Image (cartoon, rainbow, N blue to C red):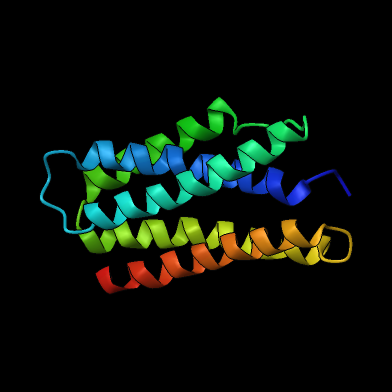
Length: 144
């Protein structure tokens, strides 16, 4: 197992979440969407997790890879296309639920793979992050 593997994964996942949510919020500017405040709250949650894992990784001199420019560009184009096509709260919630669900499933797999080897503190933090993702999904369902 890699050193601080779960933290590295949370770093990448939260970094992508931050990028995607900021892109989405930019697209929703000057639009009257009720979901905007919820998206801002989700963004703050991802930023908290990102800052924590970044500080842990920095303290341990462990580097995590950021998501590639191609990955970010693909996400950005997908968000812009979706908002242009249908910027209803329901449509946005659907897209966000799908994205967060993919991250949640991957997080669960990572936790299961690292359960026997990871530090208890790291496992607890990863489970907290997983719970955050699941809470995000539940919160977004009210917009469907």
